[in-house]
Image (cartoon, rainbow over all chains, first blue to last red; front, side, top):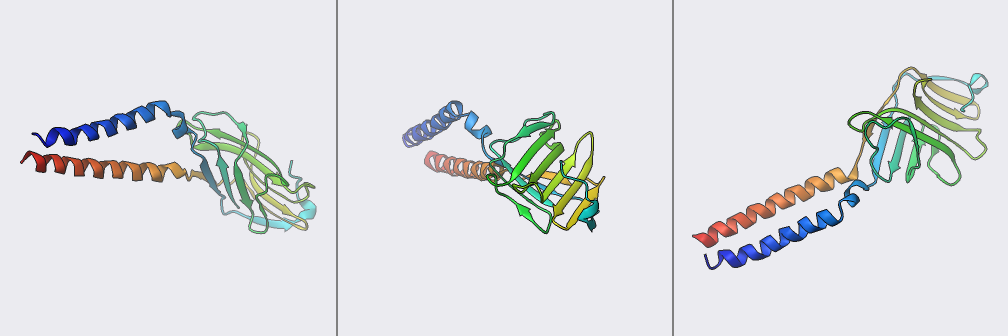
Amino acid sequence: MKTLIPAAIPCSLMFTGVAALSIVYPASVQAVPTTYVYTAGTHLRLQPALTAPAIS
Amino acid sequence: MTAMVTLASPLAANMPLTQVTPLAFSLSDGVQTFNDPIFNEYTFLFATGPSGNITNWRLDVSDSLEVNGIETRNDAFEVRDIGVNFADLGENFGHPGHWRSAAPDAGSSLALLSLSLTALGAAARQFKRAAT
């Protein structure tokens, strides 16, 4: 029991610190840059540019 | 055609078609690649579903003269991927591709979770050893 209580104190301090940080900086989790990757379908048709519709 | 668009934060759920400003992008049609936010002309719009997944989009990027470009579009008006490069073009009508999120925070969150569980296990073992 004597060794249990001193070991529990730093542990609870550590968890309290993490909990406090998560309350203070909740928005920073949402602001993580996110990359979106697009893969096109496979139905590709090639043709001369003379008949190409303009990219608007 | 492939595209990569990095945004400052994940897209919100149930978002109507909305213009976004990317941190970085890269669009390639296999012949040309556009990835310069300063010298390329670009317009990016996304719409999302209930889980934040991209449901509709319109990405349009071209060189500064707007002669060569790439467009991928899936909105109420048209579904097409198209790349124009001087004398040629590649196009894909009516067959939309798919988007996936490569969120960099997902991996680090899992790593943090597993690290926390390992630490908890080690602490529990210490307590058990101290108690006996």
